[in-house]
Image (cartoon, rainbow, N blue to C red; front, side, top):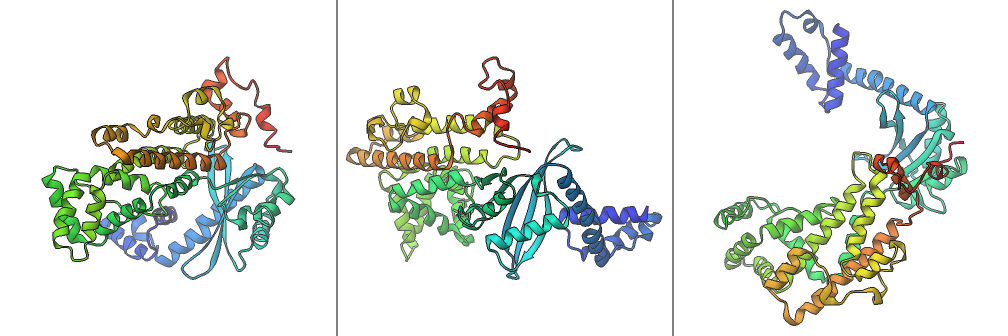
Length: 437
């Protein structure tokens, strides 16, 4: 019972990331809490023992269990290389397999190993050595996933090339988590450059200044605005752009009043420049358009980051969203009569008139209340250029072919599988893309 208690407490420390040195004080506290409990009084778990149990006991058993799974079942390989604070290059080797006990697909860390040379060939040798040392057949690998750097997915000398030499049937998938966010980032180059600078400057104006944040809270009370902070635009948080734009629009009146107050005492005139841009016709219109379209892009991006299984609905969901974006500037008869793959977003004869562009309900409503006059044509052209580039970038990153693997996976959807009008009568056409022999 004492050994079991020490094992459970060590597992708790490992699962919740509790520092090892806290074990010294925790066990002593438990002895005082339960003076009549023989188990607590006989526990002798210190930081050294806890570390040993976790690293040599629990971790060892976990590795053996995962190794056994990989020997018996097909699995996918997921790797990533990183440099830690000690400037050591560490390779993490993940596996994904179907756990029959849990009745679900499981991701597990097979091993981490320090590498001296992070070239594709050396990384593959390292992974191959790990598999061979544990008697895991390479033929059990059915899939490989990694980030999109040339070391991993290069067509000439990438990791995937070396893997395919040993396992020709392996299915390779690059990282798609941020694909659509990158599409939006590329499309932003079609908009006026001052807009991106304005969004960043608004965020930076409140960063690391408790005084400005406090004064802004007072302004929020005056205009009865939600007491939300101005978010920071982070390049590595791919969904932050839409949230930042939405927050600026939510706090628009409070920001205008705040910058008016700041402009009177700001010697650098930073607040005055921001106020000038906010009062310029077209700024809010453009933010309302971006809030609408970036919301759609974020919705598509989230599909790749879901914790639930969505491969069976991925093609349908993204096709519907992509068709909706195309319909904002492509003629309706073209959208209804042609396949998505046959529509070229760069073909000008397919475009609607500028006045007929759909820019989102809030943007269209603001245009009706505050017309842009002779600037409206330029504004609509910038919006259309953004939509064109966005669709071109999406086409590069996702296949809308109706005979693609993702398209055929719709048959795994229960409603589709039980429907008499289903597109596939058998999963054989899907199976040929994943040979297991």
